[in-house]
Image 1 (tube, helix red, strand yellow):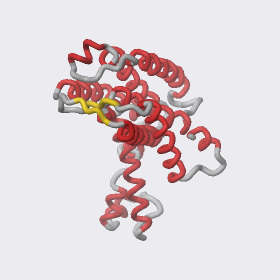
Image 2 (cartoon, rainbow, N blue to C red):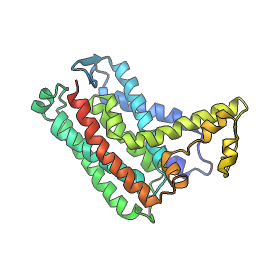
Image 3 (cartoon, helix red, strand yellow):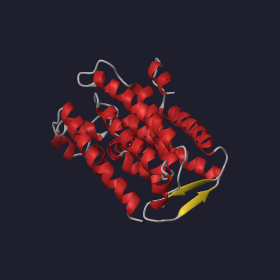
Length: 267
């Protein structure tokens, strides 16, 4: 879908892409559960819940749709999304092979063991290798671009792996920076569309900051920060593209192990 959208003369509407996202994500959820009940585990509790295949499919579809859309929104600076995704996939590889795919460790940590964890780890590590090769040419200034075909595909992969692990909330730990960056963009799009429908929208952001301060409160909220957040850092805080990539990378490297440890051990 992303590939066809990239090649379209007229970009697809958000509504059309959302319908296609939902359709593909539901198919992915069905493929993962194979119409069988599945086990899910959650943060801060030792309980493992068995859910029916329709419930599992809906949860998987929601996680995958969120994942592929936030990754798509975060793809705006050379090397940014690729770097963030490499970090996420590296941690997922370790998690799949050494925790979920290891029967004794999974039992010790009170999470469902997945005997196919090592096979999924091979897939994620293969994508790490592909992304590292891509980043060699995507580093600023880029000579090759990812596009929707890449960003949405990677987002879907991460969403699928999260459901393989069996804890939907791990999305907050595996891609915290991408989730925050992209989700802010999605929330702002929804808010601006709402303002437009009620007749209180503004076509573009005023350049002059003093003019912005004189706007009505609902428009001040809309323009208080740029979205995605990496745009705000560049255009409002004055960060260079390289600074955004490096600083976001540092935040991601610190947050992922910390959040994973909390999810695993505080139960």
